Length: 91
Image 1 (tube, rainbow, N blue to C red):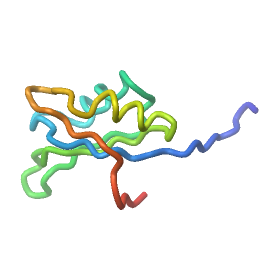
Image 2: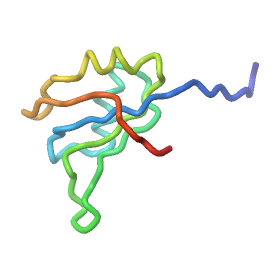
Image 3: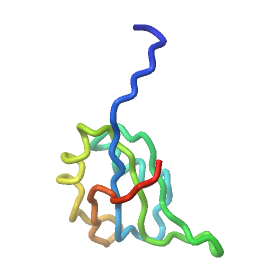
Image 4: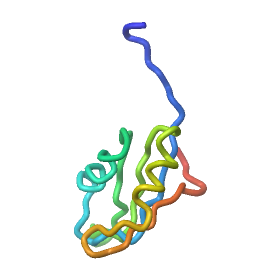
């Protein structure tokens, strides 16, 4: 129905071994080639503001496994990504 808000279940993915230069927008862009991205965030150091080398991407639940299979082990900026379902994520 028009104006109806659908709340499809989502899954948060952990993305490790990110190149230090990757920011939220670049992380989103990499994953948008494989699924609708609901949120993407690179974790940064509180004091320096620099990337800590990992982040989280939220995707619709039905897309999670295909995205993991497509991107886990791929190389981005010379680094092999680790992509899996995040554990103990607080929403």
